[in-house]
Length: 501
Image (cartoon, rainbow, N blue to C red; front, side):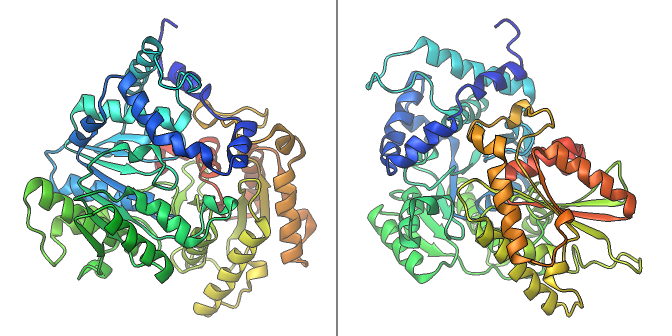
């Protein structure tokens, strides 16, 4: 490979994805494979030239949670950059929406393509050159997420960042980001039943996993949690010998700030970020935290951005269409999504026209999850919101059309390189099983809904094309939810990236 371009890097990265069969084997193991995740990550670090202790140089704020961890990271990133504009601040999050390099940011901007390719292939080559492994069965190269994590560590260390906000991938205890020996501060956003629910995890078990990021001598922060979860987090903090365990109180004046991220639930995430940033700045920069919210923090919170989460985007080329983008993919996050969407700030906004806009729902969720539960909770929340705002509408008629499509990017069955996934079984895609199940669930939940307005489609491009056809009838509001991959693909196909990212 002579060119070593960004595209080359993405092509190589996609070879490291687990296919659907591998993921199923992992689930069948009952989670036993995760037990070796941290030792393997440490070994991979050594093979690319780093000791585990080197990661302490990154000055890490480590964040996990079921919902809101990404938003908390975005708020924290903005707070640190505004408080210390001379600093170089690294941000590592997942997943990406349109381009992989979004996951690794410096001072708010994704790594440029050439920089991503440079750091990517340096890690790739070092793993090729140093093949000695403690366990011969360990893969020569790690799987997708762990490899990107290694690239992020390498990039941040090479660029000598002053601070790093590090978002956990899944869980906490066994997540590969949990190799940092001594973060500056750790923080846990709201707990709930997340992806691990497919393994039958209870809330206390999830809290145990998340609490695994707490470290000896490091402040352990959390938002207020259900008592059964809070009890476990408190015990984990004591077990890990955290320097303090803090259920963060609400910051005076925060409720008066108009946050850059929409949704009432974001105030909890912003509050956690404020406490994490204050603790960090005190420990690293010697800045004594004030009880009140500094003006720099207010500005930072107002200017925070986190694309694809409760985001309203005016279509740049189709002025009658407004996209409402939210990658919500748990019952709890979909509840927050509908609280935002069915409000005067979004779908119920005054448009100056007598008739309301045509509303379209574009939805997908991962195979194996209960589509009926998801869609039912969305309709129930919509009904509550409509009643709250004294609307004459009913939830069964909130949407005029519903579209259930796969996360495949293009109509020819292909993916944009950055959005390629091997985690969907070919049989599921061929039969559109998940999408047909969702359509059946919708018809069961809303029996009067016209059958010809329920669309089951094989790709995001098909979905966007259907939206375009419906635009001829007048102004259109489109809610895209259920999957961040779906939101990212929609940004790509509908050409929203330049205004949405």
